[in-house]
Image (cartoon, rainbow, N blue to C red; front, top):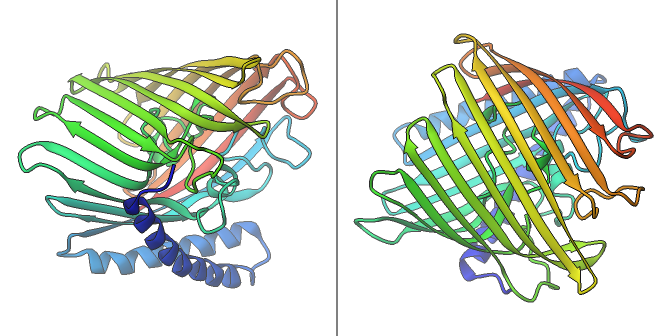
Length: 390
């Protein structure tokens, strides 16, 4: 697929803004390198981050522009790590072990009118390093870079193009927006972002939304020349009540497995039910199929359930149970011929320290039928994070 003019324009603008972002990061690194300890370096990064956002806030007043900033520092430890002191290959967030690090930090600019909207967000951190490792260097700092035009004066019909948040799943890379500190295996191995064109419509009562997408591929910014055709996506979201929603999303297109092009069919379903103001439940299910050749194909699937309890205005807790089955090793490669089947459970506690500050802690356990955690079939992880969201 040849990228459309709209997508190319957005990406060209992102490259230009990326130069300034890289220069900014270099200055921060230069200053933080004067300090020997990782925790002190993280503190310096947070100070630069907050200072930048305060300056942008002054510009934001009485403007169609809005500015947001976010940063999450974390520390992780586990009973089993790889030789590189990282969690398994199928984990892309909060991946480093036994050291303090930044999972995700970004600044975002939004411009909005009645008929036009645009978003640009540039990022740094482990999420960018691991989840965008296959992208060219110019694309790795891009969290969002998109423009949208409203196609009707009366209908809520929009056409958006560029790098956008994924239409798949109930979790995002922004931990503070999710019920649990870390992402489910299901979320880590489906797109967090997508690049392409999206046509979306929301009905007047805003009870349902439908979207159709033409995409570069499975979570890709830079178009892969070997893909001769575009990929496609569809989403239908229905909210019969304010406390209940149902979602179906899919993807049909191309990806690479074992350096071979595969045709992927993927389906995502989830339900979010806020039983009371304090108790909520999320249930999700993913199933996918890859066909690499006439002789090799396979299915993987994953159910997940999450319960969240708001203890009071300051404290929340959540519990997650998940299962991931990939017997054909299409998503998670192993040294075993039996593929992988992983059972995971986790529990986390959140403390809202202030309007913009969130402290989170999580304990989780993975059990697998094969050695995915160094030389072991199981691991216990403890992760804590500090989030500032402005």
